[in-house]
Image 1 (tube, one colour):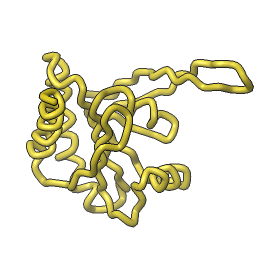
Image 2 (cartoon, rainbow, N blue to C red; image 1 turned 30 degrees about the vertical axis):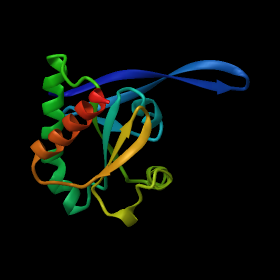
Image 3 (tube, rainbow, N blue to C red; image 1 turned 120 degrees about the horizontal axis):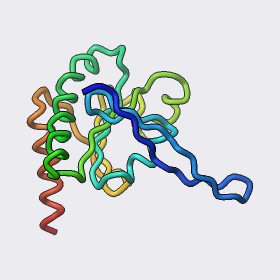
Length: 152
């Protein structure tokens, strides 16, 4: 699918003046790539955001990459059909001091083990999700969440 880039406008208060700052959010294989600079804006982008916190040098993360990309492809196809547009699939690479500190603030540090999955609803932490080896189980869980909340 290649890399797509879009910009999220973030309003920042600097020295008493409001400024709009464009923060790039890239997609790799339909997975939104998050950084400390775009994380908060991305959380409010959709109703449900599943984030994979991963350390790509770890074997479990590398082994799970393809499964997670399949989940992202599934929802990208659904977006094209105007279905499940309230769901996005993202990853946060926990490499480097800044990213490690940021992940720790989100209670997503290495002490939990990687990959670690967190679901955000309407910009707030909602629940943890445990890794599975079948992309259909990931996708079914996210579809179930949207339908469950549509019925409430």
